[in-house]
Amino acid sequence: MVRTGIVVRSYSGYYYVDSDGVTVTCKVKGHMKQKRFSLCTGDRVALELKGENETREGMITAVLPRRNCLSRPAVANLDFLVITLALTQPEFSFLIMDKLLVLAAASDVPVLIVLTKADLVTEELAGSVASIYNTIGYETFIVSSKTGLGIDRLRARLTGKITALGGPSGVGKSSALNAIQPGLLRGTGEISSKISRGRHTTRYTELIPFNGGYLADTPGFGNVLMESMELEALPKYFPEFQQYEEACKFSPCSHTHEPVCGVKDAVRAGKIASSRYTSYILILQELKENKERARK
Image (tube, rainbow, N blue to C red; front, top):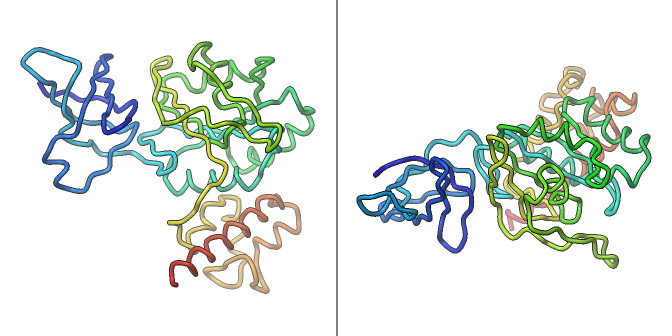
């Protein structure tokens, strides 16, 4: 029997597919292995069930067209990537946030921003961070898993959606998921006092049914790599740059060394957040270094 479903987890060569509410353990059919194929959590697939009667084992025969796909973490067909960073413990990193925003934009994945551990900072600090991203059009949630701040609003926003939470270890992703739906995950990690980072409590990406959709906790990562991005593409992933680029003398403009640059003028005037421009310069430098290494 041929049917369709969504890959909710993959592990050791097996793919676990939710098909009409039944989890089917699958392998990939031989004809797919003869060709290059990409298959990850979130993919919609066609599958054949083993035997004449319905069983919980099957073979994946095709990967259906994707809407989008992240490479790290590997997950496809997302309604949202919820980029989750702590406001403190560990210290908030503008660079990691901005790298993740760039990667999501490059993958055509819509973003929600969740700022966790709001109970540990002042309202003013939380608001100042959130305003940077609200101003440029990102929907931002300030939450506390301990007090429940922002949890109801976030839960309502994620209902019926396929959503992945991504961010470094120890920022409160798993705690936020458990606050949204108690018992959703079995355990969470703690921050190492020596290195101020969380232990990697999530080993693989798994979609968990939630209010008509799915939630995914993803493996934590502290270093966001940008190997495949082209230098010239970077400015378009900073949406606040666009309205000022008409004032640039050169096109394209790198917004670095050029003598007449609308983006740099906007930074000096406080119209573009200095933290965002600093992230842009650091990411641009990383891309240049990657390009130089590739030439050698």
